[in-house]
Length: 337
Ligand code: ZN
Image (cartoon, rainbow, N blue to C red; front, side):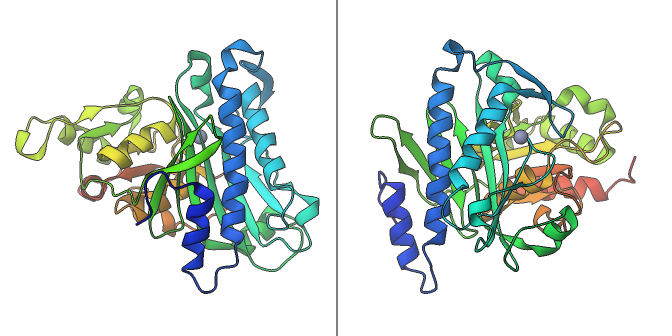
């Protein structure tokens, strides 16, 4: 196991050396991502002092108020991938259509799905935000023309996925699908250093995170589950404690380190929930499973959902295996609403 404090660059070099068919591309992709994370972290650290806070006046593809920093973070990621011949196309929460990076169109073979600034409504109150990324292989070279073309050419498997959490310190957590590692940014030397080697998520509890304000509009399965976590049963660690910040990355990070479940169910108003499949649910599902946890839409694994649109949504139950399995059992024990 790599030593705590190992620099990301060295860690990637040594990990790739163990894989005979490694090409160094994974290292390049992660270095590009890490550079974007560092730039965003630096901007956020003084966001209250600059005029970067507040709404940009635009509305994104999801119909949400775009913050100025959403747009800035989006640009920073696009710039990070603009060279290197690896990524011809980026799909982000902030852009209706995929962004094409002309330098890479001829030879690029990866597509990156991004939530550039997750939880950006937390910015005005100086609370945690994050960035989420998912890298997939693209079959055939050259520009992706339409959404249908893109979805038919992407691999169902993610090559690498993870997130940045901008909290008291900046953390990068990623997986290549087998193990999960966490790095913390040392802002003075400007490097990510290994701080959490081979993260394993506890099998259950003690936390759950959900927007309970909408509970009366949830379907019955997650409502039953909610009743279960609130029951008093010290032997199984219940009741669980609620933690919900409004930033998916922040809530998820607590859960993979400490255990429990994140819920964003389907509601009467939003039958597919709020969380986006390609750049929120799928990458965090890959991280959760690689850490020994689980991710479900209540009826099937998130990782088995075949995407039909770049910006599609899905209900999600994410975290400790024991808790996700119990949630699924609650779903099947009742007839749908
Ligand atoms: Zn988000």
